[in-house]
Image 1 (spheres, rainbow, N blue to C red):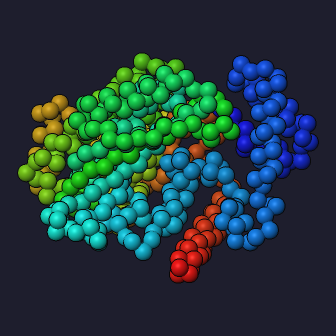
Image 2 (image 1 turned 180 degrees about the horizontal axis):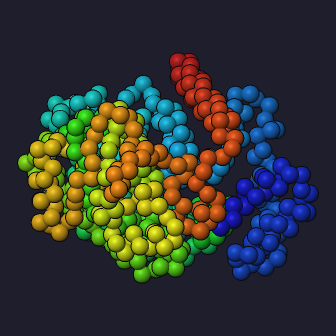
Image 3 (image 1 turned 90 degrees about the horizontal axis):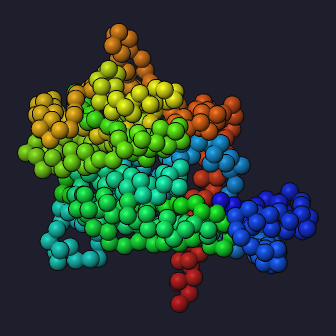
Length: 466
């Protein structure tokens, strides 16, 4: 895929001549499209003209310049590891959650760093709650982005992103009621790619009995991006009357985990390491079935919280959960290992991927000791493996106990486990200039917050004029 607008702006910034820029854009067109020189030149000329005219450096009015400008951090998302589910990603997302906070608070807001967010009908003003007679109803919502490396495999991409979105509703104690689709394709993507993706989404819709209710289909960057990439996400909504939030976790709680064969990440690892057949191991809905059993049980009130092993793997999830719940955990590594699909685990070991740092599509259950064995037995009757893997303490740390009795504290790395060759080449370790990077990022976030406040004040002042 080629971002012609981004390329053009970058070449202008580097001081390339108009002729050099046009030649480069024309070459990009020939690389991706069957197009004659005349048309390629005409398109390239239009792109260059738009990039020059839209340059905000020519704006004289300060307000408009600030409105359209960006508070630059001088740190790329790639260098910071944004989206790579490690410490670098967590740092940025904590700032995002702070920027997302407004005067109108959610019952479970982004600052909780939880799997999903929630609002209570009781807290919604101006909509006549007495009409609904659903004061105790909690509406839970989730937005899940697709796995970027599955762009060329749209069916399994749609399958896994939809399953992941529903997972995050279930672990909050919510029954999913709606699936929504947001899909963007490059200008040269075949229409069949769109249909295959939707078919993958609809497969989960059928199996989980949750309807698809709405969606959006667009091209990436309109006419400014060429290629066949597929990006986007799935949004889902669920309802409940009791929220299983991480903040409910108590010292002494038992931690259970169900079997996991992975989803989008494991599929990506399999495909890009040449182990395509292992992708079929991920095709199941055991996680969703386990949640249904638990949510419909008589012991639901003894469940403190649930979580899916996803962002940054078990070590990343436990770190985030501890942060929100203000607790610590002791985990038995041998018991965790026994719950990972053996075919998947063997592949990860063969390609040098730490299984503790990747998404496993396993369910974590924090519960009181009195129901631990009952849950394990109930899931076993439905052919879902589950075991007690540890317990909660007040250490505020993640301790991993190994078979030989060795006990180690584990922390998330700067990036999640490198599960493809390119990720292994880039590495998982923190950059040398991390402190400077984080300082610049915090400054950019603060400037964005100031900008938000300034624009709100402007709009309110304008409103008062009438």
